[in-house]
Length: 153
Image (cartoon, rainbow, N blue to C red; front, side):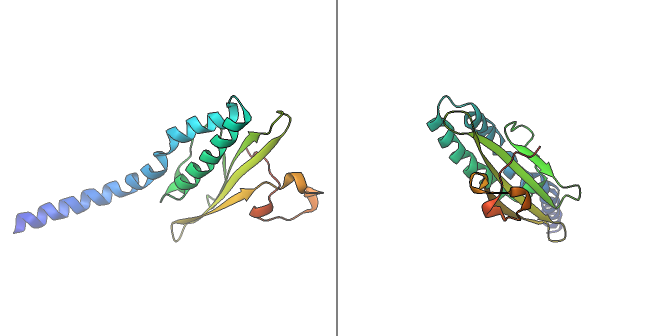
């Protein structure tokens, strides 16, 4: 009976030690697919391929950012994604671009991810590019649903 308790406590200890690493694995698991898909968004051979890749990229990135502990994942291997984190680690911007037909303009995409240090939880806000319809953006105050799109780096 005593040996069972020791084994049980040992297993609980191991799980407690591995839990943070396993939680971060959630976002890491998306890196390879995001890397390949991001390259297709940027360098796809035609507009259809780039737009379809962008739709997949949005879905994949959202799923990655919804994973526990994703706020601490840097996405360093996804070169087409720009990640800028506030100095106090409570907010970050993740942005990327999609070349529009004709190759003379871009549409910007992104997410704002906030982090509550006390609760150890994050919230996600998709950014909707409204730069094409925004007049005098330097005088506007906007929300994530009508963001003046830009690539932050």
